[in-house]
Image 1 (tube, helix red, strand yellow):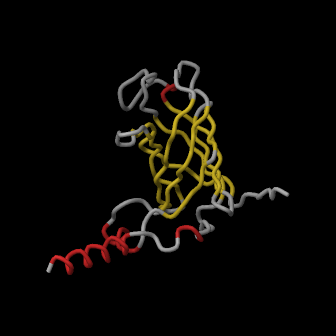
Image 2: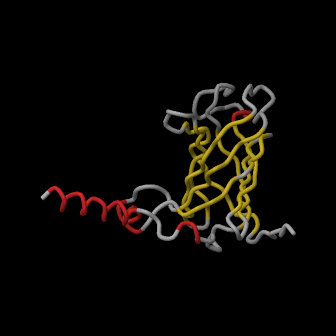
Length: 169
């Protein structure tokens, strides 16, 4: 009986994973440059939500190329070493768990605003494409902590539909 339960749970967990993540190439709907502004939630924020202060709203730009590499910035800080991957399989989609895509393995380099004391942060951006817009959240990652939603309400517009990929020789 215990073996049947373990096998059944293993099948369910495997079904929840995206298929063939390593060979996945981004869909054309994801490739391009996405931009917009979002209210930031950080120690240097001046106002309560929704903030009346313009400086509490940051520009964010995310560019995804055909190979899944991601570049961009939040305020004055830039993304380095980021990739986008599929974030869920068919079962998670049916159960509405997780997002369709996720930007991961990224580092945010530099302060976001001059008053920002941090100059290097790990982050992730789980997101879906809904009605041609990127909806998601910019999450800071810290060891042994749940990701902190620094820009929890991303609603970005696509500004370009393709990105040139430079090949290193």
